[in-house]
Image 1 (cartoon, rainbow, N blue to C red):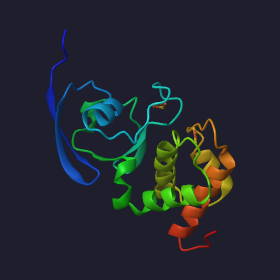
Image 2: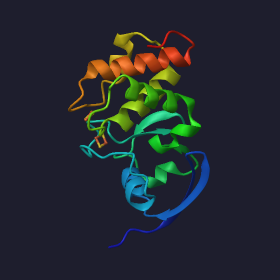
Image 3: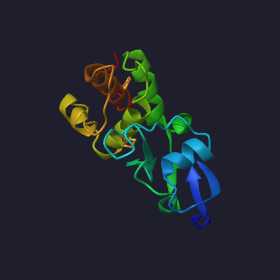
Length: 163
Ligand code: FES
Ligand code: FES
């Protein structure tokens, strides 16, 4: 039996957006397959890896566990929204500068989680950053450079030292 289709309105990367979709469509599928926003990655598909993270009303959420109906009336920011968000742009630049990207599969989710961390608890200490990113897995770069990058971006955004 086909699922019903509903109209969902939300703000996507700063733009009012309306989509017709099954209310139980996963947000990661809506983004990647229906809206062509493939910067958001799907790793585990079960809430374990953090690759699919997006910002919903400024907080990091796993789009593989979120349904389209839950987006109605919300503001959704994906990694493609970076130019509009100073946090995301600073983090992206720091990831490149610090060599924190290898295959890049984890990077969008890491950057989204770091942006949330910066908004919620702007502590530039390595332990706080490690803890804040503990739900995000990287299979190749190793975490030291990722933490370096996040720390550098935090310091830059707070007007402190940059590498
Ligand atoms: S794909 Fe969503 S947490 Fe892994
Ligand atoms: S850079 Fe490849 S998974 Fe993190």
